[in-house]
Image (cartoon, rainbow, N blue to C red; front, side, top):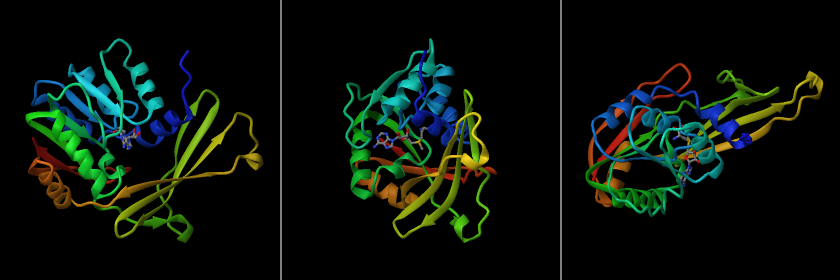
Length: 247
Ligand SMILES: C[S@@+](CC[C@H](N)C(=O)[O-])C[C@H]1O[C@@H](n2cnc3c(N)ncnc32)[C@H](O)[C@@H]1O
């Protein structure tokens, strides 16, 4: 029996329900023939969708627990997972036709120096004419429930009898960074409300980068920008710009 790690549960709870970008990744994958690299693949939300549609996908992530869950969920489907850092990976193939970077993962890598390292690695692994597509978020509405904002509805998941709750408590838009703060709570079965455990803080830091900045950085790494695409916002998720970069 595979034991689901807490990291996987939080990842699924906070990322797993996002569907709005899948049509775009499917469309891009449908336009090419050859291996696809899913950068920061997590538990395989995008990888497994594309593999299910018959594409050859290599899933790269830093987190071994997430990759183990991805591999487990793949079942009999063929997926190769690679534990590596997006800023320094060195794979034994350099013929990718498409490299996807969904859900603002490029903004998790650090600042301009780290993005440059990633862009160089991605460029090296794409075949001539291959495409790198990076979803970024540029417009996030700040809020703070401590200052009276209502905030989004908490997300919940029940695993066995245990309830996992995650609620976003603030978004702080700083000059070079965006801080997304959440509180997480794990409630065991039978816990009376008065004894519920304390909320734990979790902070995700996104680098602020515009499409034009990323395109410039990519051109320094030998990639050629093409017109960016859009993923529309939904009731639960902000929209994204997808920066399109040709090797
Ligand atoms: C927002 S999640 C997106 C997961 C998945 N792509 C999806 O769309 O559902 C970001 C992912 O990037 C991974 N990640 C963060 N920094 C990374 C790095 N330096 N190298 C590789 N993966 C990284 C995290 O482990 C996480 O799985």
